[in-house]
Length: 168
Image (cartoon, rainbow, N blue to C red; front, side, top):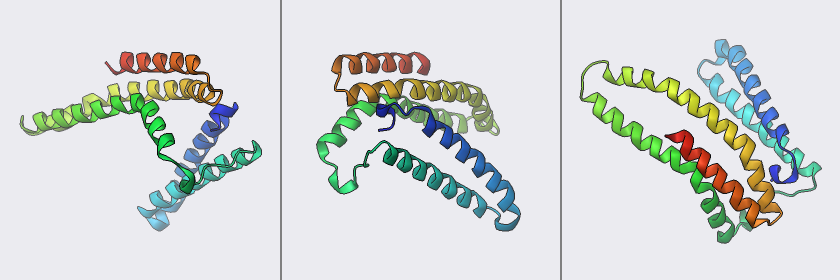
């Protein structure tokens, strides 16, 4: 919603600041709360991001859709549009499951070696997917909000092309 109303960077900035605050809270609370400091810092981070997004929506004069007002048509359209973003994740999970199953039959240490080897590739994919979603999703949201199907289709095709290009 914020992307469709030309508010691109503030949610990302608030999310980054909330993550930094989460790390500080973990560092401070761990001696007192132990492992529960992770939970507390996560909840504080989520509440900060949620309250900031709701505040930014109220500044723009936008009321978020309540769950009782959703209809199947909106949900179905969102799932159809979001599917290209989740297909690479599904393929990656199936690939990881198959690799782990095969590596576990090879002997001691094989699974750990495979996991360490995968980390470099995952770092690259994580950075690229973060950049793609940060840059291209606002274009999709804006085109959809303006009901500009040709621009929406053009951006969606470009997103799919980049996703398939970087996932192989």
